[in-house]
Image 1 (cartoon, chains in turn purple, green):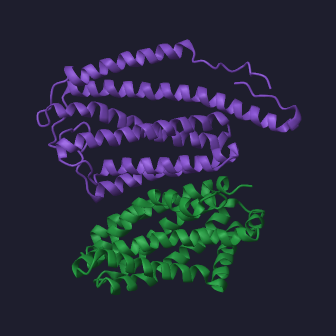
Image 2 (tube, helix red, strand yellow; image 1 turned 135 degrees about the vertical axis):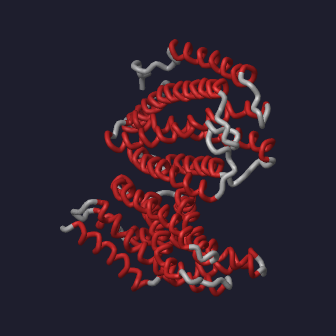
Image 3 (cartoon, chains in turn yellow, brown; image 1 turned 180 degrees about the vertical axis):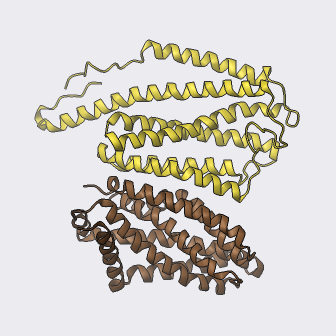
Length: 247
Length: 225
């Protein structure tokens, strides 16, 4: 058939500019975390892992929440765009929570002298990865796009609903994690203002990375949907007259 | 048709079917007994260790049994197209869900009550003075398993690889149920501490409440067509 003209295949200029801005801000964030902020009283320079670890973890949880939000929107309105947004967010959630586990393990090896503990937040994040993998397995098994969207939306909402309970259960079960990011070193000392601003800056950068990938993933999702429609349209044409779908 | 009546009729149908075939009863009963024995072998001959692991083993056996029970309840319906007929009933889909839930929960609750003394005997544990509290613990715990199992079994019934998919999807969601149920019954049996158990029972109750609402509302999207 013919190339669909109402889709832009290349990334628009403003997205490239945004990407460049993110790289620059990321460098600033790294400077703030690695050089500008003071070392911790108890943990010394190890605290610098925290800037990358905590910011990524926060955005990862936001991403799971947004996945469920877009999933609910899809169930409500049935617009394909919401499904695309939900998948995009789920992919980012999987990436960010995997990074959180890697960050947590690098952090806990020198501070707690073990790679893995059955700590509440670490357990929760590992479960989140398992739940998100289940979401993608279900998506891969359903062929019809509408049914795939609905079924995976249900899974996404069940997943997001289970996180508070997982958190509570794991927290009561046993925890070794520094109690809260703001009371950082477990001894109850509140975070120094410089550290807090470095952490918040890094969180904003991680949020911008998330948002950029969301926008780009939606762009790709739209192209994918168009391609799927073109394929379906081509199946309808008698086999002798089929052309090639150009993308 | 009255919706509550529909819930009861669906539950009655499932239970009646089971009463006549006894397929799930035999399967889950022997499966959970074998699971208990296998876990006991894996733990070893240390009597103290066995006693402490008793409630954990019971809940693992029940979690696996709930997968079998929920998957079978759809299998029987799908085999002769009875499920499609069930969906054409002029009642909300949530009534079908609640009916299946009721049947599965009733079954799992009974299984739990049967397996509890078996576990206590096999693992040499004593129920302790607060044993009546174990009944609501088993009730709330098996309800949590049944809620997720019945929803996800409906979701996977038409998919490839459903046998392995159902536990993969279900177990990460029911981790809080497993943890809370094991802790609650463990603190009753081992420590005889009702206060500690109450906290965990509240968590179980909260989970059940949230998921009764969520699953009932979303079931229609799971089983359409």
